[in-house]
Image: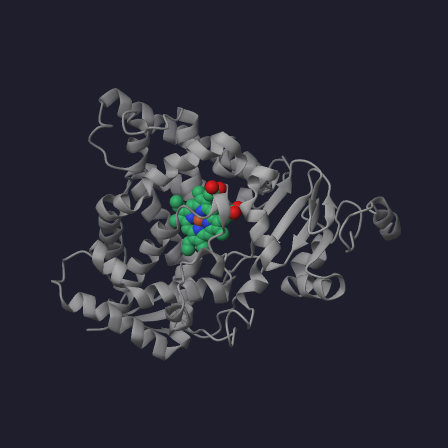
Length: 447
Ligand code: HEM
């Protein structure tokens, strides 16, 4: 079977590599061995090789230059190639499912929601208020920081998108959202009890709740007075892009989904790395104490203060790099196309695998050390330096919002508390960063 499968894919012009078993391909090896599978294949076939993973013939690219080329050239037919289960559950109009001019206006609408002015005037005050409250009364207890940061990312995002702070609607949205997330990461098998079926059902429920909310706001004409993202999108005079209701709903789901695991995992891993690196923690705490020292206890963080948190930003970048919160991004070809001297057939996936770039000792001397200071020496925002937030026309639009959330979380966490890990926490780094049994810390108030 293995041989037959190799012969099936022995077309002229394809990159070197192996295709594994029919149907399953090399998915098991990929998931089990993770980064080592990639490194072994690279040692044998170079940085651009073919495989068959997660149900599709795939070309894996580990070459920084080619990775950048792929991200910069969506217009040539290199469009997002995320799994079907994800597209089904996130909706027809979610940003990863649309290309060309539709992508342009959906992205435009999203960018107008998270522009620097919006972060300064609308979002930062909300985030500050949320975090200040969320991080109350943690002292004197053992908390699972994984669970806390997950809840934090979702609740903060629900507050910004639809203005929800508590109540029954919040509870049902929360539990539906967790099912929705599980569904997007599952095999698309539509049978009772599967994560996929439950994810689809959860999507239906989320859509129903959002639609009801929109109708209620229209009926009571409160759209004008609310200042959350949903109302902003519904107010047609401000919403230059004039999205349909379906597009608005899918955009809200996109925002909730994209900022959830990224923000929560980065926050959790920052807590972990700071715990293990006292000097970095002291430097970070000093940066935040200086800001707090100039203010009254109840004063919120201001935009200029957020911008002045240089070391905090460096901690976020370094956490994102060392933990590799995002291993890579997926694309697919819309027609046969030549890349790097090979011909990639139409419909093949391209895994733009960026993980190894994070551990390059050329770009990051002593790459396995947690060293936030390295980001202070170079211009961290120079787009070619890293692909931590993607690149090209799909560069993460929520980057500054995400950084604002994590910075505010860290601000209240390090100025209010000290913490120690309660031993025995296991961490898995691949395919996603998770603590399978939670990451428990004992928290004490600083004063
Ligand atoms: C530390 C936090 C974050 C990290 C590490 C991160 C990372 C990324 C990466 C790597 C991509 C590129 C995906 C691709 O090319 O296929 C991306 C895209 C995206 N991110 Fe983020 N992200 C973060 C926070 C957020 C937040 C808070 C939002 C909420 C608005 C967000 C919304 C999006 C959206 C909508 C896209 C798709 C853009 C498009 O297709 O045009 N992200 N992000």
